[in-house]
Image 1 (cartoon, rainbow, N blue to C red):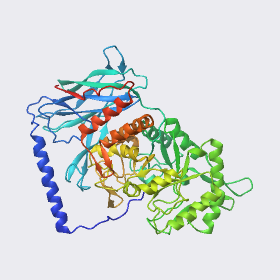
Image 2: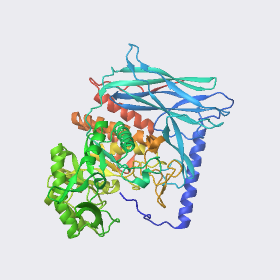
Image 3: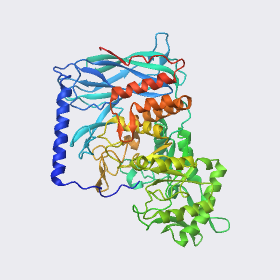
Image 4: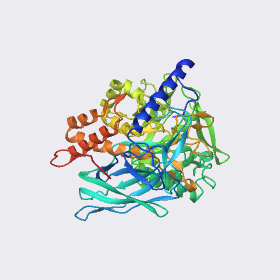
Length: 587
């Protein structure tokens, strides 16, 4: 979705100032109350404590007076996260975290967790009242493989551990030791993972797509040191690393820029034909990495939101050579081009065995103003490639017959549930998407929102039968410094983090974020909920209702979430018995 250049809604300046002041007082009071159960550390010794991974730890977060030893609950074939905070009264040098394999009393083992170090990004404008802190503030988000060079005095440094449980791991309680070292100082803390007799299915029924910016040369050359074109093997090496990261986070569809990867050529008869070599390599790169699911063809028409003045790319043969040019999206020239291109695309997809997986975007976010133009373009696709399914983010219901996969924005999905249930009953798919909206009281994946708002997006999808989630911004940063400019996007500001859920590392490779991990774990939850819904739909619905009543009425209580998730694992376990306790005091 193309981010708009303005915001909807008007608030009187006095009311806006009052709202800001009130929120600041509320957040300050909450901080004071929270501080009653914490203490400030003194001296050079490290203080290390465990924190639930759904809690954002800030640099001024202090240790609790009564730290907890948390037990991670995991299904087999799942990834689960642990988090520790460390703090000292004096400056620490480089502080590292190591952890070995986790074992049971009977000798079964889990691979050693991956340790990463949480970094902070600046939020300059508060999204809304869902924000955890009022801007300006520094929020935790990037997950760095290398620890910071130093930890300042009375500054908390969170450490993130990712535990990947093999599909054949025996159920049981696995324990290990996490060691934090700074110079000659060391602190040791236990880590426990309870593996339930439940296996996350390998097959993924939730469609997830977050669009990469690999087709934008100017964008990518901000963070790589080579000419960003498909003729450079370094391009494909980096794309393959992106694909592996997406597969690790259960992304199942890949947005495929047709104009970049399908080239026109002169056929043997001198007429227009097409070269699909780059297209094939693109698809195979992602599939080889494990992104197995949908192939998402990019938009055929490009233009402003609600406009009827769209442009499209065409290939022409001039003097025996292919020429790439633009034409009006509803012009006779473009319709004549589609009459050649679409049958060739459909035939190639069928030849490769990809036709059933392919989805075609027409134009982004059609509205009441341009829906007739959308229907006109859809008719051309139906005419020349009748086996290709059409998908789009839609802002208007009057497109029945033109869309096969409806992707309304979350608020529109919520407000038009009856309509979308009818579309599902008629055989259409229904997903939903978030972008720079909706905002409070809805869920979204903004940096200043609680992490549970990210994870529960997929519980919401499970509750209402949505079979997919779409977001426009996987790595769509527009700044040379995406770590310090997380809101700027080509001269206008977006909600913090809307443009990217990963960050650029050395050579441009993707660095994960807290939100990326929450998205992964939410998609795992979706599959477990779907598994239970097949066996016992009433029980699955009851568990979801413990957290979500409506799209705008839900809980962001971390203890309540953990209890519901344990009930989910318990319900899926053979000969289900009482849910075991969540945690023990101490440590």
